[in-house]
Amino acid sequence: MQYSLAGSSLEDCLPPGQKLIATSNVKRFKAFLALITDTSKMYSMMGVVTGLAGIGKTVSIKAYLDGLEPCAHTGLPRSTKVTVKPRSTPKALAVEVAANLGDRPRGRNIYEVADEAAAAAVRNDIDVLIVDEADRLNEDSFELLRHLFDTTGCPVVVVGLPRILGVIDRHEKFASRVGLRMDFSPLEPKEVLKVVLPGLVFPHWEFDPGRAADQEMGERILKMVGPSLRKLRNLLQTASQIAAAYEQPRITPDILNEAFGWSASPEDRRRLTQAADSTQNELASRRGEFERESERRRESRNTPREQHAA
Image (cartoon, rainbow, N blue to C red):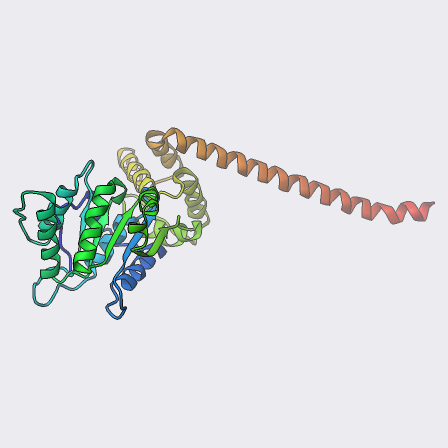
């Protein structure tokens, strides 16, 4: 089932023709939510999910929500997500939670609105409340989430940049309620080459992990974008536009280099330069080892002759 929620962002939406790529992080996030929402456990708990920007957190949330069946007696999703807006106040967050559950809070202050949001969660039998962009939360907003959790028993999962841990771990009243934690680790290069790059859909983009030239191009892309899947997407989108402008049938390494020139930040350029220097140093080291090994072999062949002549 697919549905849209108030507060959804462009990151929630995959472009036409692009299927979800089931990376290891997408699978781990699904398993994490299964533990959080397991009704057989005796005590409810909060969860926290952290990861670098552009690493796939929001897409994983979408994949989880899209896989849920609606609640039988309400027809609404059994789980909901809110996205914290910049400089969001606790009251604005409570209003958004209630709105996502089909309610229009009429409370005059944060306390009344928070209670209405809690009542909406209970009335709709929500399994979990997911709060995306949670690094935008301040201490008062965390207090609101703690109130919703304590009042309803509904698990709350906050998802954001690693800096949210600073707010959570400084306060025992938050940290003690967090029973599960997950970190979105950067994907291994092997997974990007074998799963992500072949699964991406862009005009003029083809990638066969079994083809040596594509493998080499994929390794070059990894050096350009680092662990960010968002930067990878942006790079290939720009390369696709350039290939169309040049009327080229497919994206080539030269087109990728041009796209990188348009899209790279200073940090991206430094990383690529460092990767190139590292490769050169490794090649030089291997060349030195080869030359030393060759010299040892020559000496080994010459030594018996010299002894015999003596």
